[in-house]
Length: 233
Image (cartoon, rainbow, N blue to C red; front, side):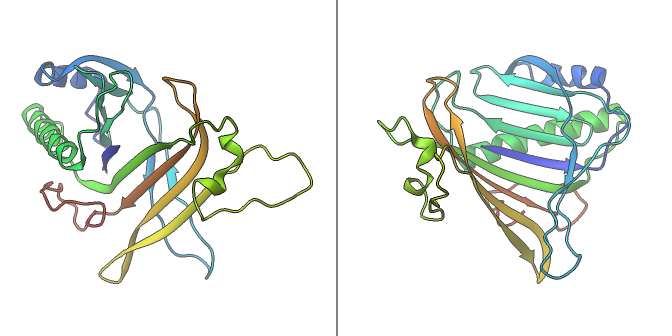
């Protein structure tokens, strides 16, 4: 599961500054690693009737690296870059149980406030969100079925195999829905089923991913509350 806010780029926020930010995170995050930055992603609308427009990705110049802070238990990752904050939970390597959406939302809100305070103290700018995202990823197993990648129809009624006269190997299913706020198209909900393998056990499975990505109602930073849900963002 992951929660993310994308915002107008803060050019002054460079890797050394994010290193200073770690001082306020050391109690909850045991280590940090560099990674390539995520490209900016925007849900776009318009164009000819019947034409769908996928998310648009932008990359300008050579942005600072993304810094990934790993929680003390290894299950929580906080990603910080010039135009994005993201918190995600992973089951492995810790094997810990999923903490639940409410707990993840509360922790993300706390980290956003800490980053806000750091940016203000260092004179690096303010967070002005332009896209918000909630995502769930779940591994769907068919116990005892070594050929699970051939049986997507056993995972979801939304897909049926077609006899093409050839040995069947695997199937992928993707759906896209429009999210509207006040009659205006503001985002999309994506669902996908794709062949995967569990990292910890090597078991074949189908990975279900649900992603909701929307434009916030205003330019001010969202104040995450108990009512903040995938629907409201």
